[in-house]
Length: 117
Image 1 (tube, rainbow, N blue to C red):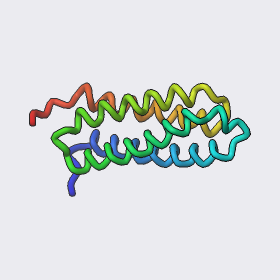
Image 2 (image 1 turned 180 degrees about the horizontal axis):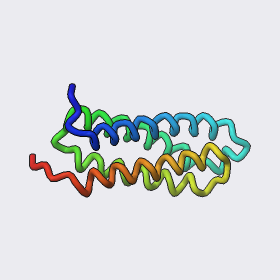
Image 3 (image 1 turned 180 degrees about the vertical axis):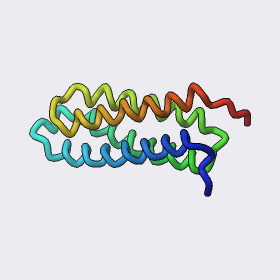
Image 4 (image 1 turned 45 degrees about the vertical axis):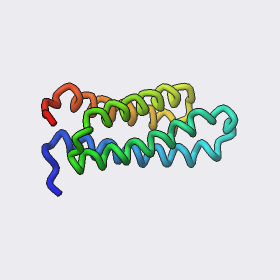
């Protein structure tokens, strides 16, 4: 399937990268000494993992609900980023950074999408 444009491809790439770092952060968090403080973080990382995969697929399929799906995904990413920022270790800080970078690119899509369905 051909991706509509470069911005769509960028969104897909960033979403896949975020998905990967979420999985790594889940693994890290499950083995962290402060596991009890990471319950909400782990739940959000799982949510973020699911939403990033689903949203990337929506871009690939050029879903008629792409803008709505992307908006919801952005909310999940924002919540995940904010929770990650509560922790100071390198892995969780990197996850927050990748969340921020992903938000920039998908917000660019949301601001510039002019398609009518």
